[in-house]
Length: 490
Image (cartoon, rainbow, N blue to C red; front, side, top):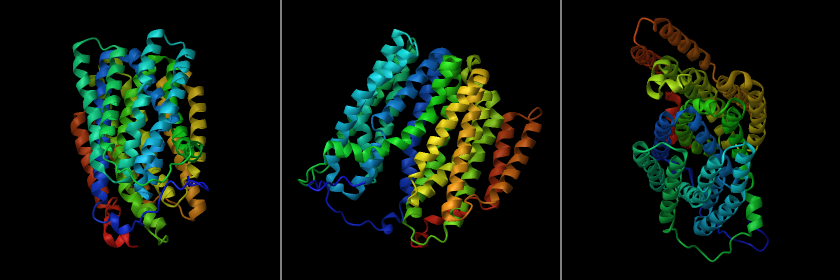
């Protein structure tokens, strides 16, 4: 939606980008973006891992509830505006500074509105005054994320990967350095919250430092505030709905099964979230090529190639977790988290439909069908909440794990049906069934041999055999050929 009103021309036309701009650097940029994600998510996971082992499930559960709330409040306060800035500044780079200032101001306004809502929710959930105080300091991160997220949108538009990587590195480094005083003293909730706030504050300060070099641009007036609010509203709706069914299980676990149940579930879920780096990196490389192609007759074969590669990739974390979760999780986390191992084994199966959904969602986005995301995610959110409310009181974190897989499967079914109806082909390759049969045989043989062979030896052997097989059947090679210039020109 354009922000231009009849008397407000805040942006000037920019030269048209050509597909040739992507040649030679797509995979490099995708790898760098994926690398910045790895930096952030790995630092975050290590921090959570240490905090979980020192705090215990009860206190760690409260901390994860605050994390879930801050992510939801961030979306309410305009986290989706990153995509808005990335799109608009890509088209009109001379307006980068003006848009940055407006979006930061808008997010600060939203943060001031939603922060009391977070405290009110904690109050309604009957948390103590100490938790309310910790929540207040935690929610101040909303104000730090205003300049930080806006800068990330600007850098994405300019394909400036180095500042993005530095922002992720600095935030992760502060979290990891904060572990030193935390390990030397008591691992209390207020001290952990201070570490979180420090990380966000350093990221915000660094983003302002990087953005200071933006050119001031022309003298075109910026868009009116109300027009900006209306035009950017849709950029928050879809990710907000996604976040509801992505985070609500933690909140429901805390309410219906207790904080300890939420704490046991949180780390396995973070591991599943860490796995998303793989499809994210691959689809970051392929999306521009899919969107720029003018010949659409190859859409079916392209979807088949993507689904085959993503399906094969998703099987490796499933295989590793099924073989190693039971011995490694209790050893690393301690006896308080012994139940996290079966939770992880159940939850990891959600990776298979999740990987496939990355590919199909990006195909729909490349073909201008992103409006369907609101409907599909809304259905998933309703299904997720209903199933969790019914099953968590009886089955606790096991129910939440199973419902996550059911929700991802429901999204996959919707995506397949939409593509089938609108584009006239079935997007999943028949090779998926053959690869799954080989995977089932490898996993079954490994489980049968587990009482007699060390688990680590079994895991290495099983993943090696599976890797050789998927390579021999050509699960990845068609997708890798997409980066060739002649494919770009098709």
